[in-house]
Amino acid sequence: MDLNLGALKRYASAAGMGLMKEMAPRIAGGFINEKFHQWKVDVAKITKDVQNNRSLWGDMGPDQRSQVNDLAKRVGALDFITPEFLINSIKKDFPGVASLFLNWPEAAEWLGRQIDDLKAGVNGVDQ
Image (tube, rainbow, N blue to C red):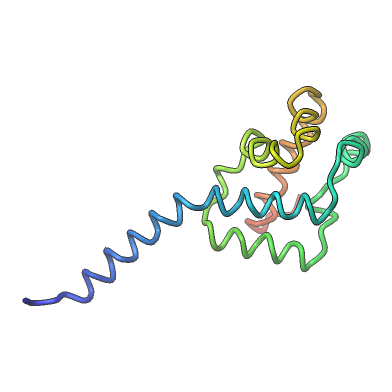
């Protein structure tokens, strides 16, 4: 049996990429929840952030930006991260915050801007 290692590596790489694309939302959702817990996010904090139009990406330090960039490298394109994705990721642990985003149009708009800023920041575009 002739074993073609080049072809085997290509197939393994393609399979790995497919698996990573499938796992990316779970990895990102877990990361988001971890950060919400770490930052002690609650309704009052988000309300204040929305009212002050706080830029989360702009307020992140180099270490936090590095963590987000590392996540982006692991999961690939962040196109799947939308306001709906984030809300679904946090609704179990942070139901009040999820409800705020769903029921307060200004909060929903703010969340959309934060996600756009994050994606632009990861791609090296300053906001």
